[in-house]
Amino acid sequence: MIHLKIISLLVLCVCCTGTALAADMNDDSEGIYFGAFGGLGALESTSLRQIGTVILPGALPDLPIDADGSTDKPNVSLGGVQIGYEWSDWHSTESGWGLKLAFEFEGLYLGKHSPEGVMPIEPQYLGTQYLSFDTKGYALLATAMLTVTTPWSQRFLPYAAASTGMARVSLSNADSANPSEPGINHFNSDPNASDTASALQFKLGIKSKLSRNLILFTEYRYLSIDSTRYTFGPTVYPEEHPPTDDWDVRMGKLNYNLFVAGLQYRF
Image (tube, rainbow, N blue to C red; front, side):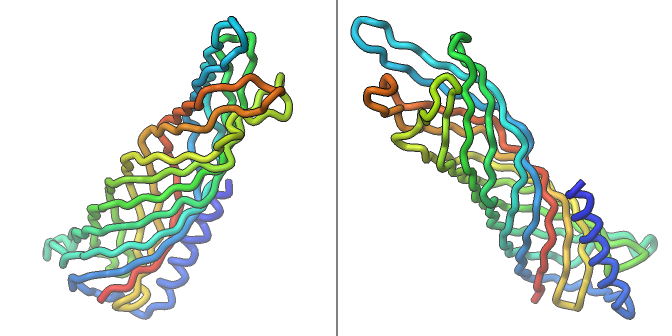
């Protein structure tokens, strides 16, 4: 519901701005542009797995731990900047339809969001592991974009784009808890970890010309970051919990649904 309200507000802003302009601005120029943007969205549920070994005392064999489950769907904010180049449009003088090609580079920041995972443990008699952590992400993306010009208006321009690049995902304040062991964080010796993975992004949006040089845009983005893997520190609670090896945490693809608005300045 919150996403529908955001979209409605952005569309209203575009329409109000467009109504204030007296006439269409037919501008086929090409050149460099800079942009800045921000928005809100949510992370889809993804797989989560925690693997480690509890080192038991004396002659007892070590106890392998394998907890496997999924995360919830936390909300997330984002912001970023972009630089690009757009070429003059190719159009049909008879139909009035045309296409404009652009390439851009983008730096994107995903603000802090805190997925929580519920993971049944193997062996089953150990119950369920509950994992939470603060997540931040950074991505550098290269984008190819096609903008459609129509016979009805040169002021409102729909577009579609695809991006590829790399992302850095950082987890902090990780807490791995089990109700059978109250007060124990199994990552207590080092609750922070990061990993790098490839990223893909798809965008659908509409541009509104505020002036010859200034453009407002609103868009939907689907951002997908490939699966990542993290190493957290061993459990260290002398006389309270047996020691463990380092913990291996594996997270599936991070898929984000994002709603964005921004401004571009064209030279």
